[in-house]
Amino acid sequence: MNTGIRPLAWSAAALILLIMTAVPVLNLPAVFLLAVPFTVLYVLLTPISFAVHATVILSLALFLFGPVILFVGLFFLLPAIVMGHFYKRRAPARTVLTAGCVSILGLFLLEMLLLSVLLDIQMTAELAALIRSNAEALAAQGALPAGWNAEMTEAFVAAAIRSLPLTLILASFMLAVVTHWLARRALARMGIEVPAFRKAREWMLPRGLVYAYLAVIVLQWIVPEGDDSYFGTVIVNLYPLLRFAFTIQTIGFFFYLAYQRGWHRIVPLMISVPVLLFPPLSLIGVFDTVFPLRKSIGKS
Image (cartoon, rainbow, N blue to C red; front, side, top):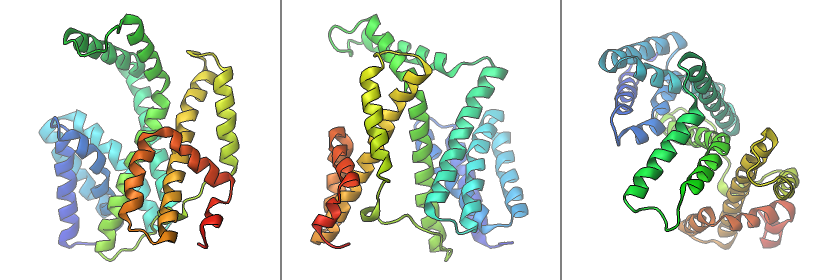
């Protein structure tokens, strides 16, 4: 068991971040960081010692803020255990990220199920009510575009509900990425090496994903707009998800180009901003996947 000061410091960090989730404004950054100290603790300690530290952290939070914050702590504790377990096994970074993303997504779905069954709270209904109330408040302030009406609000509500699966997937992905990126660096500073992601210039998607992307585009033309069926919802969520994947591929291509041309690292980082903001640029990633664009630039 690691009995040094580091586990105590990381336990204190976990408690502070958990408390911050109950503070307006501070809660958003705290949510993105909360799994990091738990992940580091799991790697540093034996399972029994980790259980003791986690129990003390959650008990103090429960005493200070009540049962709601306990559920928040448990939500981020479980993915941290999953990712920490794979770190201990020296699993590849892709495996760690996938496991973390899937565990967070599973917890999102479980939370929605429990809210529905135990408290009769429907997340889709709550989301719709929140959008309508915000739209009414903005309309009262004259902040909505000219000509905005109730039908447009309802169309926006329907689109938001249909896109909920995509939102949950992207949220899970971002939480897992932030946790891995920070936890890996923290562990490296303590002399614990864990596998890193492949360098951005080496990112490559499987070619088969292009055919899936083309199929989804064709199906989008076929499926009527506003189709609320299961199939329509799948298509609506798959399209932006695949487009995001090829956006990442585009960024990888520019990092490869910068590497071959000897550009400063800031150049591909600056290019990444318009790539993320202008979705049609993801087509570069599509062409990079289908055709040997990188081979025409130079040797890797």
